[in-house]
Image (cartoon, rainbow, N blue to C red):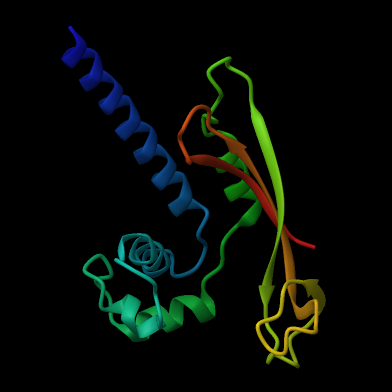
Amino acid sequence: MDSLQDGAVRVEALAGLSRFRRELYECLTLRADALFELMDAVLCTDGPVTSLPELSLSGVHRRGHGAMYDALAQGHINVSRLRMALAGLRLPRGTDGQLSIALDVTPWPRPDAECSPERLHCHRPCRCDGMRQTIPGWPYQVAAALGGGRSSWTGPLDAVRL
């Protein structure tokens, strides 16, 4: 009986993932196929990604690097629709069934991008001279629903640049 229930849970999880991937694809406007394969390449590449051409060599990215650059230059994501797709996902809950939501402000350091618009000084221990407590960049606020127990899985709720 347990293996039958486990199989049903797996089928339901796979169906949910399939629905989300379909909705994610619908959030992409121009060059959707290439952008979707690029997202798959980011998720499926082992280890850190060090360059864009490296992503185009991933097995799940079937197009050449030219298509990838074209997708990044011309493609867009309908952010409102993506937020709605994420809002429709089942959120992790604690053992008591309650939601635990965490907020974090994380900087994206860009110290050498002097022409980048709207950079702020983000609090961060600097690796340079040790004296500066801020570094130019963009602060992002991330909200996530935390899973219960010993799991490190979270459900992203929103991320906005401050």
